[in-house]
Image 1: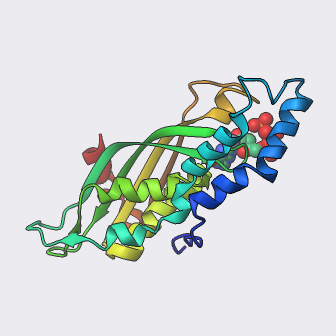
Image 2: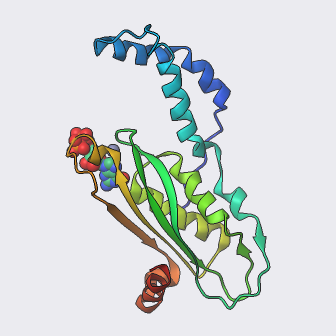
Image 3: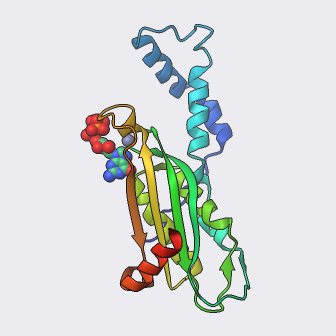
Length: 203
Ligand SMILES: Nc1nc2c(ncn2[C@@H]2O[C@H](COP(=O)(O)OP(=O)(O)OP(=O)(O)O)[C@@H](O)[C@H]2O)c(=O)[nH]1
Ligand SMILES: [Zn+2]
């Protein structure tokens, strides 16, 4: 799978303008149908606020992971796995547009002597994809696909644990349930011992 395409940037200013129009009208209509007064002092700014929040939480569509992973450094290393654990994120599920929140463990194994990415770039790549409408499976896979596409490592891995608002607070209403997804490529996919070593490093 290739990395998901980054869409043509939609300037936040354009969305802010739209917030004064049809999209906000839709939210006002929903508030009215719910029996609320959209012109009350408490709610009059709410439609625009909701749209600003959604725009902010989907800003990853305007970002390209290649930009972050283009910056590499010559580092004296022996070619072992490079791991960052417990990286927090929040995404919106594409089914309900409710947040799912959790942590990712991200790893890649550069070829011996190959340039490496800066530490901060792994969380940045996670956020490029987390700040979109997502499923957890897709988010997990997009992180490893981006590392593979832009760093050409011997293997990459991403393990995500998160709680989904749509499962916790509505519908089945199961707060505390944790979804776990994993994506392995290269040697971490092919070699059980390499994967076991990775899990030891992550624990
Ligand atoms: N596999 C997967 N499912 C997700 C994710 N986020 C939300 N979902 C699920 O998406 C499904 C949507 O199911 P639908 O039956 O179309 O929607 P719904 O009637 O709101 O479903 P309930 O949540 O069961 O009330 C639900 O089962 C959610 O739990 C995700 O990241 N991955
Ligand atoms: Zn959902």
